[in-house]
Amino acid sequence: MQLENQNVVIIGGSSGIGFETAQWAKKQGAIVTITGRNLIKLEQAAKELGNVTIAIVDIAQESSVQQLMEAFDHVDHLVVLGASLASGTVVGTPLEQLARPIDERIWGAVYAVRHAAPKMSGGSITLMSGLFSSRPIAGMSIVAAAVGGIEAMTRSLALELAPIRVNAIAPGYIDTPLLQAAFADQYEGVVKAQAATLPTQRIGTASEAAQSILFLMTSGFITGEVLHLDGGGRYV
Ligand SMILES: NC(=O)c1ccc[n+]([C@@H]2O[C@H](COP(=O)([O-])OP(=O)(O)OC[C@H]3O[C@@H](n4cnc5c(N)ncnc54)[C@H](OP(=O)(O)O)[C@@H]3O)[C@@H](O)[C@H]2O)c1
Image (tube, rainbow, N blue to C red):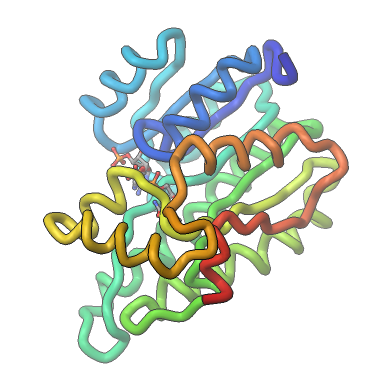
C-alpha cells in the first residue's frame, strides 16, 4: 500500500486513463478525488470506483481549478490529464478552436500547479504530454506545441517546485473513450492499422497508462522525466 492515506487528485478522472489511475491509486490505499466537467460521468465513475470524492472542474477556467484546490488542506499527488482532443490545421481552423489545446493543456496545467503546489510539501505532480511532441502529424500542430510545451515545462517545474517531483507521461494510441470518439466508426480500422505498424503490435490500454502514472507517483528518485508509453510509436 504505497499510497496509504495519501491525497491523490486526478483532474480528468471520470473516464479513460484518469479513471484507471483512480482505480490503481485506490488499490494502493490512496484517498482519491476525481474531476471532470460532466456530473453524470463523474457520478457513474464514482459508483464504479466506490469511495472517491468527485468535483466538477473545467481545467481551462482558473477559478474552477482554484475552487477545487481550496477544498484541500494538503495534497500529496496531483495528476493533470483533463483535456479534449481539439485539433485542426493552423491555416484552416478558427483561432478560437486552435487556442483550446493551449488553454486546456498549457494554461490548465499552470492553473493546476499554481493552486495545488502551495498545498504540497513533497509528493508528485504528473502532467500529460503525448506522442505528437515527438511524432508530427499534419493538423495537430497546436496540440504538438502544447504537449511539447508540457515536456519543457515539466523539466523546469521539477527544479522550481522541488522537493515536489514533477514528471509527465507521453502516451501514443491508448484505447479510451477519447480515442473512440475521435475516430468514431473508423475506430476499429484505425486500431488495426496502428497495431500493424507498432513494434508492440497493439495499441495501449488505459490501465497500462495508469500504471505508468502510478510508477512516476511512487518513484521517489524520479523527477523532471517524460515517460514515453507509445509501443515504440515514435520510431516507426
Ligand atoms: N487516449 C489516447 O490515445 C491519448 C494519447 C495521448 C494523450 N492522451 C491524453 O490523455 C488525457 C486523458 O485522455 P483519455 O484518453 O483518458 O480521455 P477520456 O477518456 O476522454 O478522459 C478525459 C478526462 O478528462 C476530462 N476532461 C476533458 N476535458 C476537460 C477539461 N477541459 N477540464 C477538466 N476535465 C476535462 C473528461 O471528463 P469531462 O469530459 O466530463 O470533462 C475525462 O474525465 C488527455 O489529455 C488526452 O489528450 C490520450
